[in-house]
Image 1 (cartoon, one colour):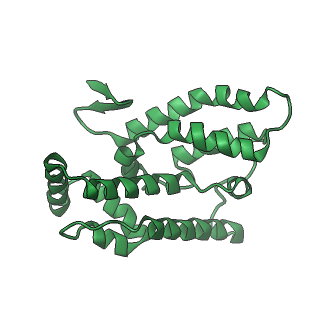
Image 2 (tube, one colour; image 1 turned 135 degrees about the horizontal axis):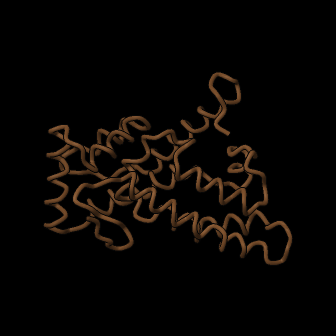
Length: 212
């Protein structure tokens, strides 16, 4: 009932959550081996080494293909999102920190953005690449996406539009323009950063329960 193509599992019915779970499972399976690379000398790994291994090896495993399934999974709580949970698990293991260590300070210490930022950047870049490509097949596919979105049917474009509407309405509006225009990915990421910082400010003030 499923076919594996370019490392992703496709079935008769598209299930983004299933794709995300497959990536999380693969990342968790690779965690022990990657962390072992940092612990061979028996000392605590340097933060620069942790960051390098995370960005160059672990994150690509975790988010492979997120341009396709990512928009459908970002609606979940960005703090408890399975992608971020898996990322936090790697970082804490690599830094030899207890699981009770707060997540936000750890990301700040390592100079890392939440996984959501990476997915948004990849999706935005993917959109811009689609618009720049000269392909009748891609033009047909995007036309179909526009039609499905106009009919309020579940589709990739609707998922992207929903995320952008929450973060940067101007970008969400530009997504639907004809002819299509390039997304200002930097603006979207800046809005995501502000939203994430606001969420943790609420946690710090006690307005909502802390995620860590």
